[in-house]
Image (cartoon, rainbow, N blue to C red; front, side):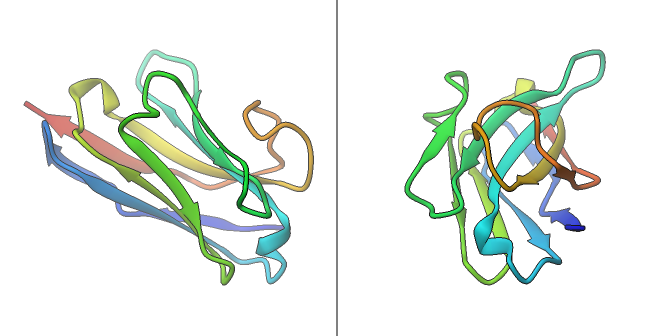
Length: 121
């Protein structure tokens, strides 16, 4: 069982930046594909970005790929940097982990509780 804890969310002004972190409990964190998703009120959860367990394959949604960067260390932490924040980035951001399969679909095995990002104008 992998436990994931997100942090780094908060209230940010339009145009600002944030770095979200996701700490994993699993000692074999380095063998999991990792992803970030987000959900805003009234909307379905959407894919944001993902990174393979070996780190060579990253994918990001077209709507955010020029403003977001995903990375990981091989201790136990996943990161998402978000630049030039927009009001539509307001959402709860979730990290997720899976052992195998496509990194950009929704079938992740483990999910964190989420961290709120609010972008104010």
